[in-house]
Image 1 (cartoon, one colour):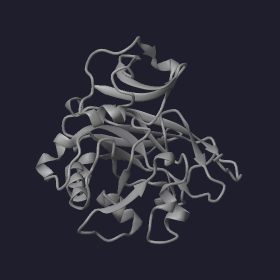
Image 2 (cartoon, rainbow, N blue to C red; image 1 turned 180 degrees about the vertical axis):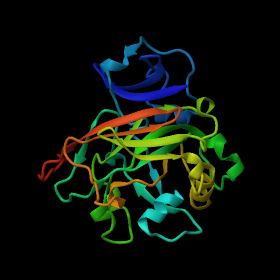
Image 3 (tube, one colour; image 1 turned 45 degrees about the horizontal axis):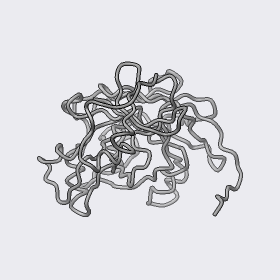
Image 4 (cartoon, helix red, strand yellow; image 1 turned 30 degrees about the vertical axis):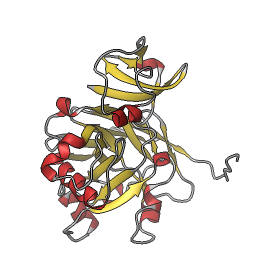
Length: 282
């Protein structure tokens, strides 16, 4: 099944995707994350259908508590960056405000002209667990989605810590919806592609992951408990703009599309972010 979070005429909600509509499930649980915490995703019930064309899709879990990312997780991408193999996954984090939903604008910051794209498979956790064995990891997965790991390369490379370059507001795209494991089958046999303005830049398959989805769950839970609604972005393949000659970074008006087999596609347009100080009211 497919589930999505959205904003409609009556505010934010979430629901089950059926054909070209969404069945609101707010009456069963206040959010998709709450449903995951309750241990179930409803297969029936819900309110009156809404046309998908009438709502704005948010990231599948807009209030995700934590986002974990794995860097250099395809051999071809590691080679194009000139990095050496590692015995362990390279883990970094993203924050929820750094991602936007399908068809939302992505923000190109005025601080840098090195805004890059990375097409990835996302894994959403459904059941909590600590020290989860690799063979048991699937039972803790709620579903999968597409992700565009937008990266400000200049800031990523300021130090050996990736966090600043990976967390500019609205720099990544996540969605369009969560697809449950029964519809996906083996998550390590999915074609994954990324286009910029219709030009195919990345073309790979998740079978090329160095550390696969289940290995990532097992590795992370050696250190801490994964909770429902946590998300893992599993790494990108070769073909990023920063490795092209000449380099090809994203600019105003560019359209980035990430498609993962069986998961649909997420598409976003790049807009310039205003160079202004924003102070939220207390």
